[in-house]
Length: 406
Image 1 (tube, rainbow, N blue to C red):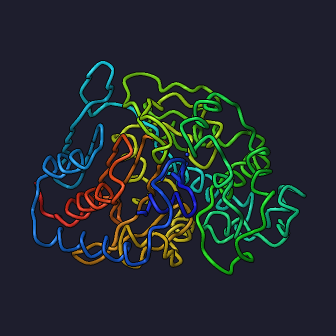
Image 2: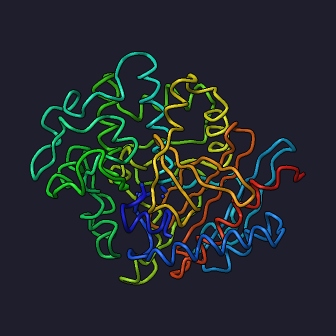
């Protein structure tokens, strides 16, 4: 998940904690200033224009910023390249492997938005439907009003709803995580946390990343189809695209098969611990999925390549609004319906959706036609001064700008 200010401070902070980026769950400390965002942006652009590091060089740089493990896949017209560094499991010393699974956090949001848009294309719901139309009285109290919020505003993060992760001890401290990491949460309980708070702004009057939006989107999918959002993602996306290494869990805290372990000290609230085991219901439709770099590449390539949504719905997904909190990822960053748009130093822009959970950071970048895809996974907290985020962005920028790289 990515978490509102604190999450976005990391997703962009520099996407579960928003990204439980991924759900946007774990992230660096909040309070990044506008100057810090500008410095990050400028530093990355200079780096990408003055250096020509290989994929492995950039992965090594990310590891040196304090990460535990790093895995990158870059795919384009000339094939696919991988680079790894660090360890997948500190206890065993196992090296990172290109086939390792990991928690993708808020990258889950693209899958959820895709299902919603497929339902729109089938005429089963409208982006202009209100939340209350599908979920009567679920969004109410303390100034929250589901009759004034549309499905589009949920997917676009313009609803104004409070991010439930801002009042969620499980992602705020080592003690909170250890106490609640195996707790099962229902979507209704997560939304109820948000309803204890006033909205951040009137619907449509601003932009603020909120995981609450996508928990509600998952609930709407179930109401419209009679199946859980996990079932619909599996039936509509995973199976047709043969994404056999992607998992959409419900309450199982384990990551099946070979995987990267996550490590975090939750903003230095205690010792660094292994945070791999987590009941994913805490993230729900905002970021509970597990995948690999290969499966994420296949999904995003198919999506942007027009193989998952009809042209009209894909165009809706790519219509973005300014999202200033994401500027640390790039100048003029903007957000569509489950997709971010980030500028490149070489001109143009790429799409994608990052994700952050305690111990896991997912970054991805896809060309507008889906032909070039870069997926990057980093474990550990990374550096507090945003140098990890800067190094991640440099890798993304250089790979996507190197159109002729073989």
